[in-house]
Image 1: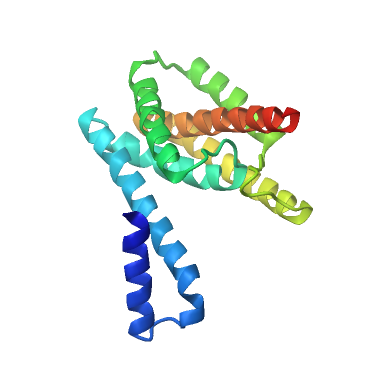
Image 2: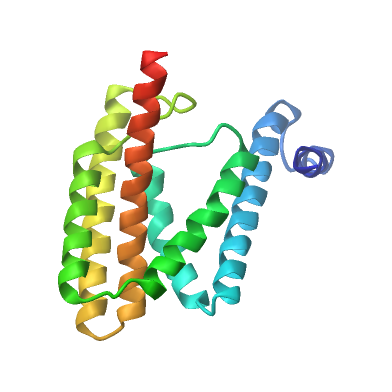
Length: 193
């Protein structure tokens, strides 16, 4: 279904002379990825709405998406599997924000552990998206920058008593670290096979 929708949109762009016919596959892919992104964001916000945590879900996504883009980590075999995996993943993140008895010491420990995992392992490539040496260097540098910004923001929001925003950022960093560990394990298992 998604493939059909993205194909129709891309074909329409060609028919209206917005894009060249030889670029239709690229635009079809881009449209499909855009639709998937919108569906994922809407699902995350819906989960936040159900849990009474819309702000937290939005802040979590805003923090998680950039670090995940450059740090890498586990990737599912298909977009459907990824989507189905993202639902309990988002639930776990929001429930963690709500249910864990957070205090300053736990926040610092979570930031330190997750930050160290990200700093050591990132970027973790996937067999679908291998990285050459230049990309490894660039992605690592961008990951460090994003991580520094997120940690600084989490600390700042905690200090000005916007704890739910701070916790959402901390949870994004923690979940990015979890995805890195899962990615490293997946890569090791694939190498043994």
